[in-house]
Image (cartoon, rainbow, N blue to C red):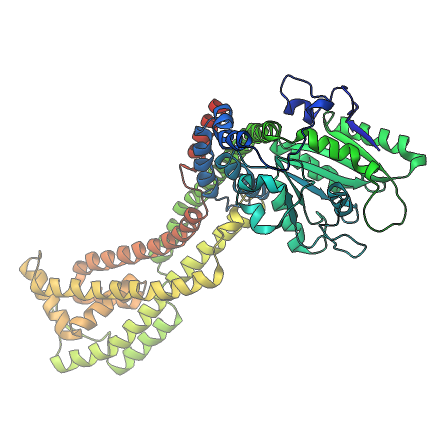
Length: 595
């Protein structure tokens, strides 16, 4: 078997330097064969004291405040929402989820339990032989291995019995079956994870979760699959989060070993992984059970070199520092994504705001042009001409002359006209709202629309129901306003005696409610009603008609505003909180200061 850290050799025997991951684990001193610890059968009192002191020693190097910052960061990252489907939002959400997983599964547990065992996860793709390698390192079958797929259904975490008090409870121990074994180097725990590309979704998710919790990745691939995308995607993720990595190239035919090893070393160099230790396991051919002890001896010796309280904690600290060093890039990108959401929301808000003046003007113009009155109102008027003589009131001078009985008959007939006018007004206002909805849909989701507009485009069914519920009450208030105007005029509020007399006479001829119905019809655009009012009231009719027309215009504009407000409310619901990016940048500054 061969072992290489990228382009440089790892020599597991003698005094040859061990580079890459192992060299950094020993700080400035180069480990030798004499560094391989002899595992005692009983833990000494001194070693127990050393274990208890481990937290203080490592905490001094990392800094206790980092845990507080990471905990605050986790809270702020979890609060980030990226609801607008703009460019980069999906990638940012994925990055946010990975950052949360990294904090939950590795950083926070590790910072809270710095003296815990270094977790070495054995990971790889389906059929790479990782469970066989795992069992061979232990010298017996602890994790199920075989030809059936998926083989690794249950994660297995194995640790040395003397390290029981250092095994921290956390995500890994909750997921995996935990086993004691004398063959595990002290200070470490070996974890056999499910296949990264398992056809069982649960297995893939578990594998990713365990990788996030690991201090060191021992990635297993084969001579036939090392060129697949999966190994490099996994290694890129490890590099991104600052994890320590080693690689095992398994089942390499002896006649192609030099070629395959050289090709993989070149690939590692191309990916900037020149310090990744590489172990090459020759192809053992068809077999069952464990690999030959000599085939796995370099990997076992390398793990032993990493073991021991001080050295395993060095791996933990190095991975922690790498992970913490990777956080600013992640957090900065997430803060930028939040800013992009705010900017997109502002563009959408500006688009909606720009549409409102024209939409309101169009709605008001429709009322002012008298298009409210339609065929139904005109037909009703002709009916009233014949049935109650609505346009045949006699005049004596400037005053209408009519009996109260005839006035009550006209009032009852004009109630039907009022219903038709109010129905026409309702249709007009609903149509104005519908036009605004269609326009907003075009500018938010049509060609040339701002990014993210489809998330706040009006829902046709919801908006139709909302309009049909909101407009009738508005029209009823408009109708009631006419009754109030007539009542005030008949009482003489603000009018001269002659004006009050004309209103009293008109109210007798049509009834107060009937006179108000004529005012509503005239305000809605009925020329017939306007002519009758001109005859019985003269110029006194102008002010109440104008008031009612303006009132209806205002209500039409309010319908437009409701449509705009619905989009603004959707936008507010789909926008991150204003201080979310600021909070992330505060944590970013704290991380940079501490790391």
